[in-house]
Image (cartoon, rainbow, N blue to C red; front, side):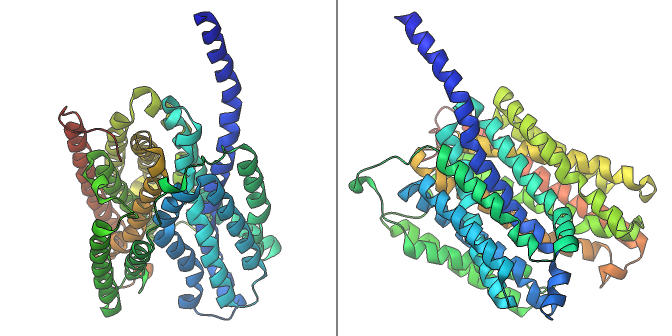
Length: 483
């Protein structure tokens, strides 16, 4: 009988391996599309300003509408997926994203385009929030890291592909093509998800908690106010930014009060008592803040300090996402083999080392002197992100996977938004100039070194938090798991 059972187990594993790969195909393509939606529109802003005879402040809402929708709703849609079924909601998100892409491509006015981009962002929020949650539903626990690495790779490919693909499409077919290109890919992702994702489990109605509408609205308002505070003014922090920041603080306070009293909260505050979850969210935000420095500082350093033309700046800037894409899957396998907690710390050490090298890099080292430490930073980021997500998602209850996945994505998005403002301010201050676009090469180089010195300090803080969390988790008196 044991031999028969063993044979059945082997046969089951053989049958399951292809189905697991196909089950991950839809979520992986969803991750690529949602990342592509962020990066591909930026390159089109000058063209769109000309097409609609609009100012930069007006056309930037094409990007902001998407980012705001993702940031404010990603936790809520993750929780909704836990309640009504993740497969059902992902299919709806893919359909919304694809339909909104069509509307973006045919929009006759700027404000209709912005509205369609907001709808596209809602679809992207669903796709981002639920892709990581599906890993726990489809992949054996021992291979969680590899699956997370694959999703990280697809996200990096989408980010790296956006500017170059967008430029080619605009040159060849016009700006509408950058949105319409999502349609066939969205339909393919929809078919793959419908065909291969596991069906939602049917639970009794008495087992289903209600959806926290008040908490959802308060969280969306708080996050929206914070995101706008960090993005308005393009680096300057005026009275409007301060008012939005105060509104975000009050909104967050009211949200906590509501969540402590409501019967079925959007986020169970008790979950944050778990050291692994709290530390993972905090370190993810810090690391994303630092990673944004490479995108904010890099173009100015390459163009002003090294004197590169726009085309060569684009090529050099694509090295980081390319390295992240190539190292994502190997990073997942390493996390599976050696442990996610240990690899999280090693990833942070690599990021800190790369930032420290950049903080001491002389301008005379040229392009190689910039690319080498950036490759260290981005490979460390790929390892950290994969291991960090694996450490969290492998130990949570199935009915909490959507909301926790949403929180992980939210922490990264908030870090990116904060980094764009905070690290940009550090760079401008360190360069001792009002207009960084006209600063002297020596000032820009000095600003770059100081900015990455600050980044290294932030990563050391994240490293200390991660090491402390592992020490606390090792104590036998602490309860395990995330509920």
